[in-house]
Length: 85
Image (cartoon, rainbow, N blue to C red; front, side, top):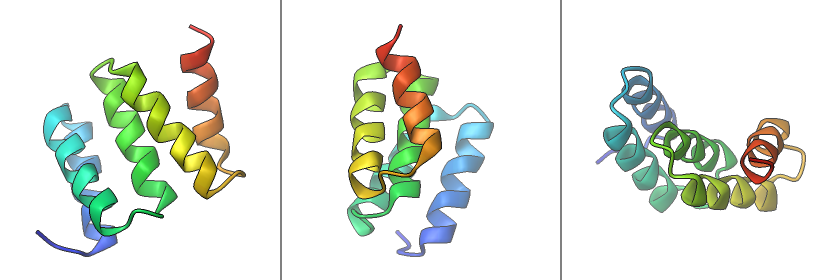
């Protein structure tokens, strides 16, 4: 598996856009292993979890994004949407 952050993000997004959520999640989880402090990878993992309606894992991902970067507005919006369901 590659350790190239951009390739991980692009491949994960490709899977997500093609509704291959399990493969997207797998890719982003690998990304988190290689880049544990990367807010973008955590954010995309959260969005992929939302895609399969796994809101607990999605919530955890968005909370982690905000720990890394308190100013990550998209993560804030997604988290708010989950919490207020």
